Length: 67
Image (cartoon, rainbow, N blue to C red; front, side):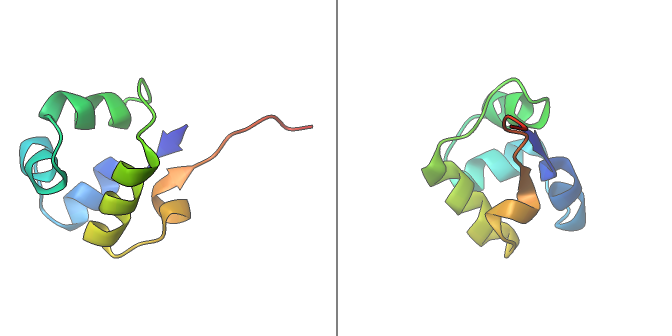
């Protein structure tokens, strides 16, 4: 799943570490999500959405099967 977390972090002037602290995960988790190596839980997706005041769909771009 692609995402715009890095863009939203830049807009809000947050480091990976500070974002991680705000949503209760490690910096490594934020890094893995940004690189597309890890898909966040629904709970974490909602936390990020609330923090950035953006919809989940604006932050995460679903690339499911194109059937």
